[in-house]
Length: 464
Ligand SMILES: [Zn+2]
Image 1: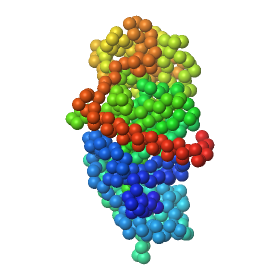
Image 2 (image 1 turned 90 degrees about the vertical axis):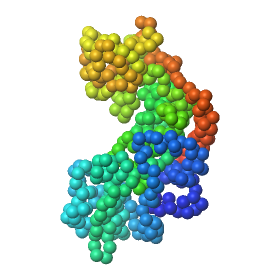
Image 3 (image 1 turned 45 degrees about the vertical axis):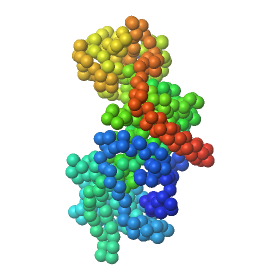
Image 4 (image 1 turned 135 degrees about the vertical axis):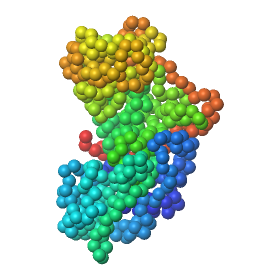
């Protein structure tokens, strides 16, 4: 149905945008920018060559998800057919999977158990994306499963499509390897409880939520500063199998540009790569979003975001006990916030296993209560490197990371250091290209923002 809509939409004057109602039935939704038409209409064409340099973007062919006649058939039979999607589970049998998909068809269940090709659906790893089309009585008309490519070297470029069809002679199954396609999409939402609740509601992959939190980490503390009513818009690229973002590779997505309004202030960022240079995220004035110091020694994730909220009351502010505590399960990786040299890595009374790293500008960072340490005294470390793991050694009431920054021997607020630390600017030679891109990205994010605000105003919030 969705594919049929896409075809219709392309037919009707090749409209640049169509609102895609996510299969979870969510109001906020995700808007697809159709490749080839959408990008030009969106005026973000210069993003394409940059994104093409990403290692993930290996597939440049444009494929039509399914042959046109099948789409037309699907349109003709809309009243008689039902489509359902789900993922296979470890415990699934042919019967449990079909019943979850509302398929009432003993012959199809037997076929899935017996046929050597169809059996692959329930063999190997779970998490295969399954879509079924059923008739009026619940009988299986077609089943399509999408899962990782059979050959590991094709893992990032292709997927396996297993199709079960029914004709006058009975059921038939076949598999084929088909290319994954990169799609540029727009998403947006409003914070009601947490970032992940909002991105889930908008149908955005976790990897996009996490990238957004990392990009704006120096401006917004996503663990503590989010307000009800904060809102965001994001333009991102995802790898898709027949138009569905792939469920088996969480890394298959990348933020191209984003706008986040926190407590009434709007922050913007976009990916920019000058020809021959290394890409990075910049604000629209041309300042890099990443600074010499990261705001947080923990990567943002579903786990760390939730724990931080619960654990926070142990020590309310960095002032009270001269550091910031990040609650997280034992073993969660700890990263060094800036380039430097390890000054100490060992045991100290209250700190337990602790690492001190010396940085430029007479700054020292401290990482305490670690369960594991991966570095030694004298070792050079670079920003973002994992140097240890969260633990509860020393005087700790539970697993957490105690983190400090000292400047000339005095404790300072890590967020302030991150915000005030050196950023780098777009070089003069790349300015004109940057300005043109920033202008069009800004316009498109604003248009999208208006759209999402309008959409969320017209729909009552979901229960959370
Ligand atoms: Zn502490």
